[in-house]
Length: 222
Image (cartoon, rainbow, N blue to C red):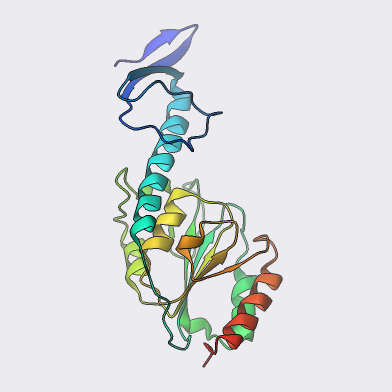
């Protein structure tokens, strides 16, 4: 439908058909009608992006979690040499401290790859590592950005999913990763990981201490 002007503001009407309603939908965001009903929303144009971002995030999470129900990934028994780290830089801007902690425990910096996620990317942002944002994945839970595809397909000995809040793009990359052993936070879906650490993401020191303590117990360090 065409935008219309109301009270001096541009408004956009969106019509959607809801074929399936999930019980875990955020009710504070949207109250939906019965299955197969048509629904109509009218927004200020500036809020349309936020609406579609929320809806896209919800549908992608649904796809990922359905795939996790069918997944049965077994952890690799190989020793750890190569490490991939998936960061949510929305909350953790400085990740050098974690890299230094890994290096101090015997992981060479040359064997560590980093992929950064940001909710918003500004034109003047200076990002020196591979990164992605919500715009880089589709409504069908696929990613085409070369840097992200390369990270997913690299068979790391260890993947560290360094985020403690679930966001669809992060869940998707963690799930699709070809890493042999996956570690993450206890606050995220346990089916994504082979091992989880119960600490806030801000406590990178506690995280690395616990990580290497159990990697030694599991005899996974070279």
